[in-house]
Length: 200
Ligand code: ADP
Image (cartoon, rainbow, N blue to C red; front, top):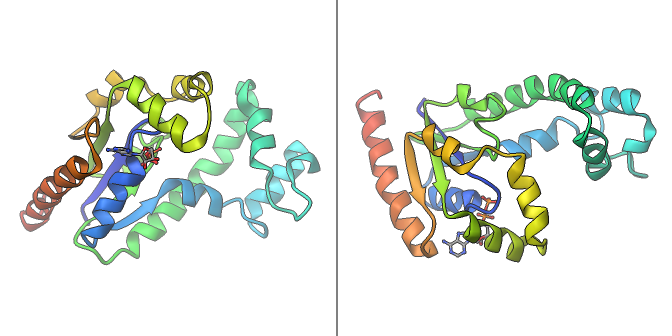
């Protein structure tokens, strides 16, 4: 099956673009969703994380305290590597399971860290949602209520705009309004259907 990786920085409009694809009947697998599923209570990975970092990474109801875990690994390369070594293969399996269950003409994998995490290896093409950084900060800030400095920090942990664009097979320019984004998605959708027809 043709699988398109949909990526972009924080606030670029990945979710908005994914909604446009969904409206056209295309299944979208969300890598963030897969990342949450693998650490749900009852999953072996959660027990391993609690054993490694201590019960302080668990909330009272037994769920993972994601903010706490993030702060523990943020400045600690070794711990981050340990966590990624545990979670990345599990997330990959979860994504593959969901993609295999897809019944649409092609499927989308929406992932903020498609390139950084190696998930691009699961897809046939990379579609980047692109916009100027100032607009990205403005939209992410309005959505999350966070200030420019917080957003810049997250952006610094993601691939720079130019590097991401270098990897793109397709680009959605989201510097315009949502109607413009929708129109561009419709154009790509027709191209993707054509690729499916030609066995890409
Ligand atoms: P991402 O999933 O990449 O983090 P979102 O799709 O959530 O980004 O978009 C970030 C914010 O910007 C959301 O509040 C969304 O509604 C808004 N947004 C996205 N695209 C546009 C657009 N073209 N015009 C105006 N607002 C937009």
